[in-house]
Image (tube, rainbow, N blue to C red; front, side, top):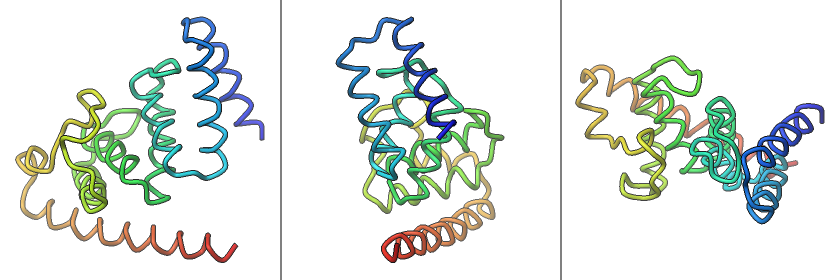
Length: 163
């Protein structure tokens, strides 16, 4: 519970200090509560909020944390964000072309195309652009990793249904 309190406290102070409207603050906290309770779509929204400074002060490391949670829970938007973070080595992550490409593949298989949702320079990368920076061996490895990640996500989903 302490980490949630710290996030809420930091977010509250930053929103007050940086002039976000009370409506934006309320929406953010409502989404944060749902995200904390495991709602993958809300986890992706929280990641996006931290990425671009929508309803809360920009915080790349929090954006990565929430994108990872969303991606692990099968949210395509979270997978797309996480792919961009890995591919560009941003948000405190080391640059990893293979992981970046793998997460973008997952997002694409979940119907998120390059033209959907704009989130700054980070997610405007599409698979064609990414593949131009990779060897064919790296792309092959990324495709294998994407399949492994998808199996992991499916297993997590099945396990959550049993709880």
